Image 1: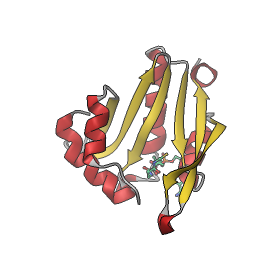
Image 2: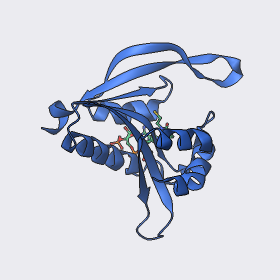
Image 3: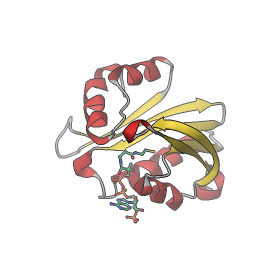
Image 4: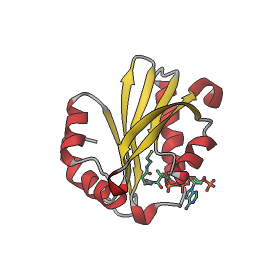
Length: 149
Ligand SMILES: CC(C)(COP(=O)(O)OP(=O)(O)OC[C@H]1O[C@@H](n2cnc3c(N)ncnc32)[C@H](O)[C@@H]1OP(=O)(O)O)[C@@H](O)C(=O)NCCC(=O)NCCS
């Protein structure tokens, strides 16, 4: 992912989240040195199917964002992207991957559980939510050598 991709990325982001990252949030993330990845269609070059952002802290990687466009969800793309991200991070020397997820996001929780992510903590009232209330974030961790070695 480069700065040139951000209009496409932010358009998908707006279409799939109630509280999306803005294009500026993505720009700030890339400018901060975070690693962005795109999954593009082989059949329709330029059509973006999914994207992810990683923040490395020495040998720990934080998965800041992983998203599949709405009309491509539920077809195995998220699973394949996660498999690739975990293998990539392990190959680059990461020991673990961490992420935050809403406890109400059952699809994402099932996906992460399938890769051995464990709930290691809770950030209270971390996310904005509908109705002006806030929702906790669950912090999940995957120890890469236990799933990839
Ligand atoms: C969460 C997300 C990345 C998963 O990607 P995806 O391509 O839709 O998921 P996949 O088709 O690869 O399915 C992976 C697993 O997710 C779960 N899943 C997928 N669709 C599901 C559905 N409709 N209901 C319940 N579980 C579902 C299943 O466990 C599935 O594995 P299985 O098919 O072996 O049972 C994607 O749905 C997405 O971008 N959602 C909106 C943004 C988001 O929530 N991102 C994560 C923020 S933490």
